Length: 240
Image (cartoon, rainbow, N blue to C red):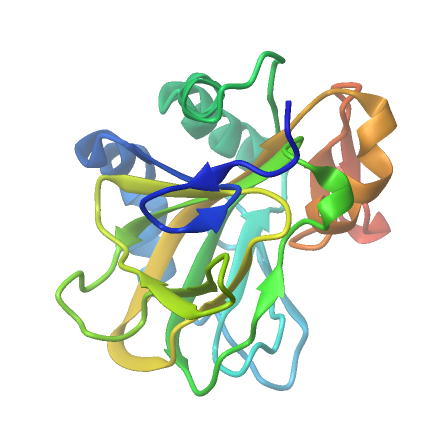
């Protein structure tokens, strides 16, 4: 399998799209989405927040990417199981294997929400380095967004290193692997834009050293390719 797969429509490597039933997504996340909308998810004085009061406790990681971007991931066994359920119910593995022509099983490493209401400038980055090949992916699908807004979408560098735009749309999922350079498009909104996201990929341990650099970044828990949930912050081990 080649390390680079060209998406002819987006003119970029290692990026894929598939349809996802929005009503099903919304039904799965609506209860926690309502709570997130009534909860402060960003504090510029902190790098993280423990949302222990939610029905599904969450951990907020604040990456300081030129705005109020927050990664909201599992802070308990029950929260991790919630993301695991979403991954299975939405058939993320099968859809990714089909569209990326993969011949090996895929495991969810972590699930999380991404929330933001403003970004002041671009922050270009890649989720996975070239060494990861097409062995690991990030998936994003919007659960709350103004689709008609001109700004606030996904900017990326195509194969000609030209800045391009992918417009988010409810019912669409975008999946990117290694060497996909991208950024949130600067914008400002009165409502939070919220996305359901997953990191997932191979169970091949020989690929793990490069993959784990991304997988361990968004929160305090992740699933190792051996199937065991690892907790990286000792304060949270009692919740798993």
